Length: 281
Image (cartoon, rainbow, N blue to C red; front, side):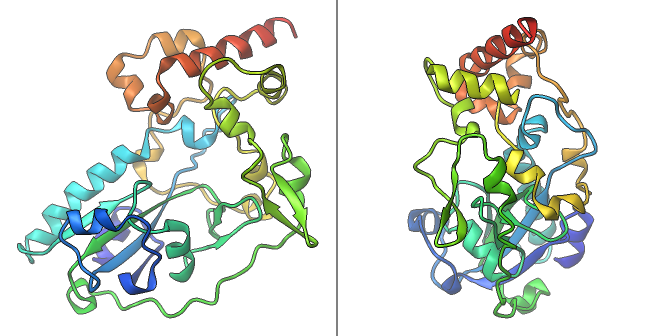
């Protein structure tokens, strides 16, 4: 299994028993035939490439990682079933039975930053999280259980709080922490319907039509962060989205982008606002 994951470009992974994880959607486990004896291979998928997007969050400039996970599961099924044809395993990402950030932390794959994101020392916060749930044992998998990780803490340098355009990261007891009650710029760009004057101003001033990487970009770990080794995230990168480019995307191409889940109208609205702002200076 180690060889398989490393060949995929997945170098950060760890095995943990389900009993150590925070289960938040138990029905996903029972639906797939897993009980309390299941094991999880926690995985990080770094996604930042050498192509720096102009008006998109980095995660939105690459292909939808759910497609990568789907392909990964198919390749994993072929690999594992060749030796263990009756084994149960299921790859989850985003829509997961467990708290993925907690799972990654106790596995020693990263720590939580003041901006609420998981930070890995090699790839900073530009990582997607995923896990393979299986009934295979550590011996069968060829991976030992991760030791109880001493969870490293954020540096609490305050840089993310200082640059957050909507003030989502607040000082609390001398430490910066993410305040989900405030709408961050990323949430504003994904909001349906008509934007308020203030929300429109945020998009215009910060030049993003989808997502926000401002707090990630100033993080000290990002300065030395490496680019993804996973080929899926190196190809078909959109460096700058325009109305013309968006109109040229077929329905199939559009559905392969991370912003597709909201439909075309939301991203079209943001692009219209962004492009009018560019014309008006």
